[in-house]
Amino acid sequence: MKLDPLSIPYRTGESVLRLAWLLVFLFLGSPLDGLTGAGLLVVGWFVVALAYQLVYYQRFEYELTDDSLDIVSGVVSRRNREIPVRRVQNVDISRNVVQRLLGLAQINLETAGGSSTEASLNCVSEDEARRLQSAIGQLKREEAQTAADDEPAVEERRLFDITPKELALLGVTGIDLRLLSVVTVVLPVVAPSLRERFADPLVGLAVTAPLAAVVIVAVAAVISGVLAVTNYYGFRLSRRSEELQYERGLLQRFSGTIPLEKVQTLAVSESFIARQLGYASLAVETAGYGPDDAGSQSAVPLADRDRVLSLAASVEAFDDPDFRRPPRRARQRYVGRYGAVAAVAVGAVFAADRLTTLPVAWYWAGVLLPVAPVAAHLKWVNLGYDVQPEYVVLREGFWTRTTTVVPYYRVQTVLNSRTVFQRRRRLATLVVDTAGSSGLTGGQPRALDIDADRAAELREAVANRLQESLNRRQEKRRRERLRSIEPPTAGTT
Image 1 (tube, one colour):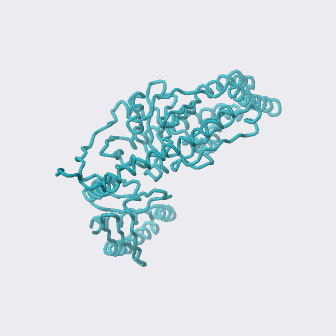
Image 2 (cartoon, rainbow, N blue to C red; image 1 turned 60 degrees about the vertical axis):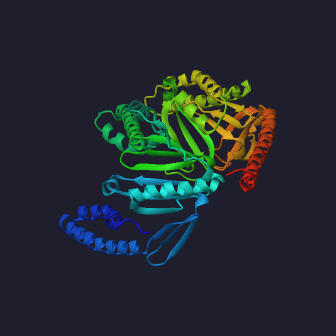
Image 3 (cartoon, rainbow, N blue to C red; image 1 turned 90 degrees about the vertical axis):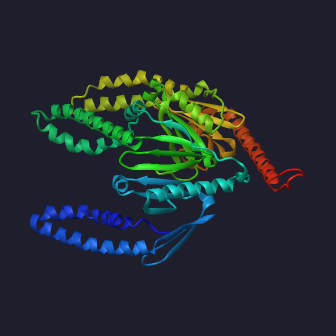
């Protein structure tokens, strides 16, 4: 089969628009000559791009067989790919505004263990995209279930639809603090121009710098809130057999699947604001890659906390966690750490007041000293772990508290780590690594600053339960295979 014929003008337009930045420079350099040169460049590049896309369309073919998706592509050199259906992790469909107007869609296939998109079909018709997504899912289910022919068809069941209230709250609670990094870039540019409006440059700096910082932070918060709303507009989640299916997006519409058999961990996240309102979000981490980031896909962007926990329990049947906090000496460690940081900050502000001519009210920085013990307690009280028969549940974070549910059979590595400062207080960190986490250097589930002896016991307990869980699953699969090959008994039809 081939791509949709409308992919030719669409991909040609995409290619021409990539020259927009060059056209801007030409036009700004010389309005008349630049405009003429830009027009000739557009026409010439359009002809080249159109010819290339025509050839690309003719030489691009794909076919879905019973066990693989075969793709043949290439204009200058031919490339033949055969992607086994069993390795397909996610089949995601994306449609931007132009694609929706033309009835087109782009399909991205991610495979287990891949570091990027394995294959992309850009663009097919929307109906064809839905057909491929459904057909690949059906083939995977038939391969995973030995008795699929004897089981009744499973109807799609709607699990979650985001409401306007939840979408509005998501815009408030979904502020991306990474956008605040623009302050360090924009502030040095904005502050000097505003400072010139004051006669005294020192007064101008003292007034404009905080004002500019507040304005930039507010703008960053608004932008991140708008992005959160547009990304999850119209979000809905449903379940069909052993797959979760989602759809979301305003300007660019995404839809995809989350195979439950590939789930590595569940993460229930509660930002400080969402926690006060009784809301939370649910992310499902798989071994593959989703459209947003490596391995992590939002199953519920924001909903009532009890509802989120109920949905999480329907994916992995864990019990209500009964968290055990780290020992109190861990809190003492945090008091010492935060107190040292506060003392250094007060000393730096005091030195600036004494050694420079800047009018610095250094004593206001002293408020950090009594805040340090409070911050230490809040960090300590939000830590915890719970070892259940089939799962280990870990909790960490204050501003964004994350509760991670890890099935034992998904664990790949269990280890203890101890820094110099942890060894002084007989503390350790238990790291539970899965195929979907970021590895042994960061982003992995962990029980932070627990008793060193307890960490060693937990490491052995998790490792033992991992083996027990794997043995049970292997025995279950063996029995299923035996049942599938047993001859029918006499008198059966």
